Length: 539
Image (cartoon, rainbow, N blue to C red; front, top):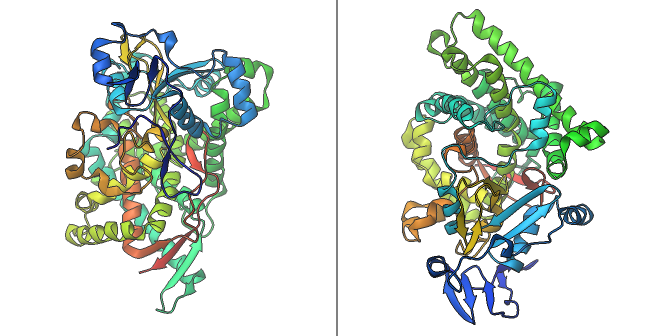
């Protein structure tokens, strides 16, 4: 693993990273490998132990992008940095080193990318970890008198109590065993739909097998919504039919608008925009209103169905997360609605978009695709139709998801507010400071990963990880967050993506018309500027 002083970036059109030379040396220079003192490189550990000149450096001495948050905000608007925030972070780390401060509008943060620093941050997150509150979302809940789910709750004890109840239905192993067959059914139905389409519309190759080149993103969004509804509400909504409902299409549109309008609202006071009737706020709130309306209709329908059956799990059948929560009765109906709505809103784009990236990377890396497929075939044959056994026997499939999310993290940062003062890169960080672990630059850094631009699911195998520096290996894969505040829908999303890729690889060979790197844009999540086209060839 490279620990060189210089930052690593990929030049446009190049096949690998090139190195930027260091800036002119000063008496003190912070680098990704440590601290240069009078021309000599001190390792990070040595600096932390001794300090520079016998002291830890002040918070104000952390390199920064400009002290005036409003001027920075104007630059963000003028230079379109909101849509390229992940690239802005990567460039800034290359210029300033492995830690920097940034203030944009009303939002201030310290940004880091090295796993050793991220480890220190998470050690100080406390019993009730805090991440950045999405104020536009919170303001919408407050102005519409909606309850907040665990994603938005800031009250530590109340949040922890609700989170523990939710964990039992969406995170624990017993819960995964209950909902895995539902996800498997949706994944198989998706592939049957795709097979029918390839047969109808595809061209016949010389070996008499048909192939079809399409933009699969609309179908992937429908898959993600169908899978989420099946797990959360215990019912199918028929999105794979020839004419999916307009209501569901509007829900997908509303989620996309909500995600797109969130980032610029993070840097401005939402209540001021509300009073001014700003179009951006109106668009954001309208999107959320539609999401809540859709979720409310689904919840009411499921509630009536479950109530009329006399039991939430009639005949021993799994009734979905909603039915389980209602049957347990540990959360009020308002809290159940709040959390189910958050899970629905967060469960569509955040799985559909990584699947786009995944199909593209497998398509342009045929050798990797073949290795994963061979392992999947063996595992599926031995599993006897049991999806859990099939996934357990195909670790490369899990590695594929981790590799997709390393290169294309859904959320480009994970935030925490340390409950005590800490030292990062020999700088003092006061308790209560928002610190962001920046996932996109970390995933593509040669400081952290060997050959970071290569798509290599095998890098996550236990044998290879044991050969690395074990102290911080767990802090290189953080797409779902960490600890008690990690993504509450993590198990649903991981298994949903793995099962779909498994069934696609069992039925199709994937290729791409163009293997050029995808251009990406950041809304609240990272996504391709233009969805990639994929060729599905029947095996």
